[in-house]
Length: 141
Image (cartoon, rainbow, N blue to C red):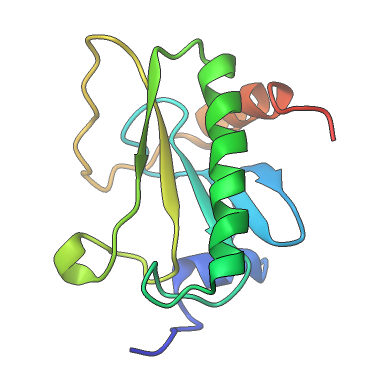
């Protein structure tokens, strides 16, 4: 399969669609999921063209994993979460919907189930508030 330059994450990377940025380097971008399954749901993507785990370059995957850890720690701290769920899906049969490799970072709270994926979009002001809290918990550069 070939990479689709018109996928939603490619459009975000090109600045064609907005996002609530949480963390960014020259190689990765982390932003709030607009259809979150829980408070503080962040997506972490590489800036390179890769569909999923099956075709991403190992060096890009290593940078992506580092960013997932940084964002995960910050999200857990910022929201006083009890734990984290990290998800990554590959191909349609594996649950992948957007064909640009990405990790879901989901802060988790004891006794609180993940919301079902209904397509319901969160209010921009809620996403900005959560993004601001997570950004504030990131380690100093």
